[in-house]
Length: 78
Image (tube, rainbow, N blue to C red; front, side, top):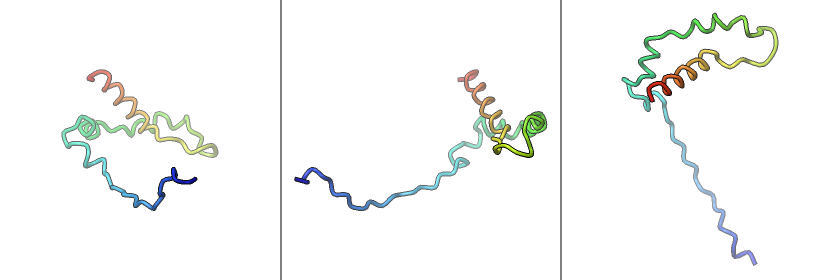
């Protein structure tokens, strides 16, 4: 009756540590942009848009800008 059921013996889960710094070459455009441009000015530009008293924690505006910027560069050069 139960011959179609598979043996569910325990299987070991393998984990691998991956570091993004090891995956991105030293001369990659992303690294060159990161060294050449200081994006911290964005925090000052958008600071007045965030409530400091209540509300949910905000996502990092610098990270969002970098994503948009790289998306623009990717569509321009890709």
